[in-house]
Image 1: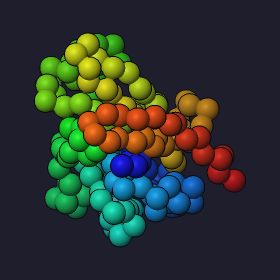
Image 2: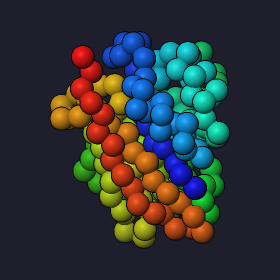
Image 3: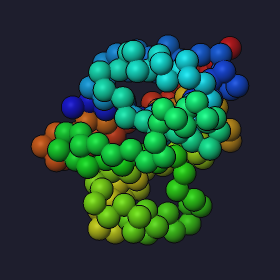
Amino acid sequence: MRILLTSDTHVPTRAKRLPEALLAAVDHADAVVHAGDWTDEATLDLLESRSRRLIAVHGNNDGPALRRRLPEIARAELGGLRFAVVHETGPASGRERRCAERFPDTDVLVFGHSHIPWDSTAPGGLRLLNPGSPTDRRRQPHHTFLTLTAAGGTLGEVVLHRLPARP
C-alpha cells in the first residue's frame, strides 16, 4: 500500500494552490493522510475528489466549517498497521513518551503543526511522522511531504519529498 502524508497546507493564506508535484503523488497513492491546518474547504474537497482514500483531521487554524467535517483525531488501519492522525503533539522535548502514552494502540502516529519534518520511534515501537508542509516551509530549507509503503503489518521505506521553491 502506497501512502502519502501531508499537513499544514494553509491554502489560500500561504499558497494559492497545492503544488503540482504533491497532487501528482496523490494520484498514485492508495491512501492520503492530512494532519490538519487546511484553512479552506476547497482544498479538502480537492483531496477528497482525487484521493482513493483520505484520512484527515482539523488543525488549530481550521474554522468551524472544517471542524464540522473533520475530527480532531482520526484512526485507520493501512497495510496492516494501526495509524492515528492528530494535528498537534506539543513540544519536541518528550514527544515520543507523551505520544506513546496517549496512543498506546497505535503503530504509526502522523502529526503536523510545526511544519518541521519529523521521523522518530518511541520506546515500545510507536513511529512518529510529521511530513512538514508543502506550502509553508517556515524555518525549513524546503517545502515537503512524505510517502511510505505499508504491507503485512510492516512499514516500508519512508521518503521525504522536497518540493521545488515557488516562483
